[in-house]
Image (cartoon, rainbow, N blue to C red; front, side):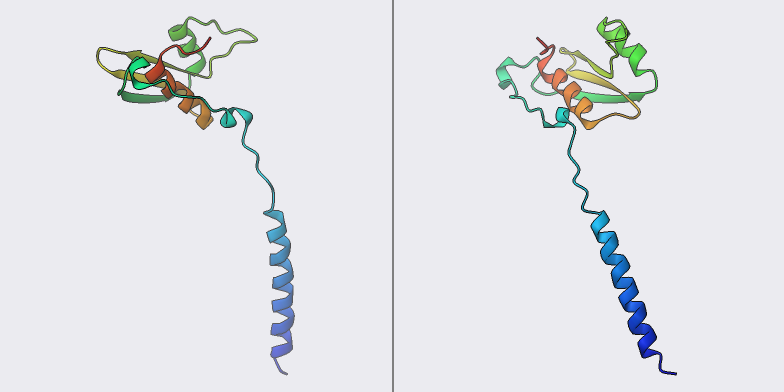
Length: 120
């Protein structure tokens, strides 16, 4: 028996399966709207620090700790997801996030390190 026809059928089957799988990978991923928010950094002479040593602490108790640091109570409508505190004299800043977080939280808090309380 000639094995060539079986190889041809196997190749056709594999080709069909792989082309079907490639179709599954055409899913379009849209980033969250918070990742699409842009801002204009303050000029160096308007920042609270022009450089800083940044510490990052991913923690399980992020809500409770950030509530204590910021003074914003935990309520149904307010749950701190991350926070930052800084010391201008020592040029140090600590960013606190949860263990699972979006990169937008980290970037937002690092901005606080350089621009302080920029929220309206």
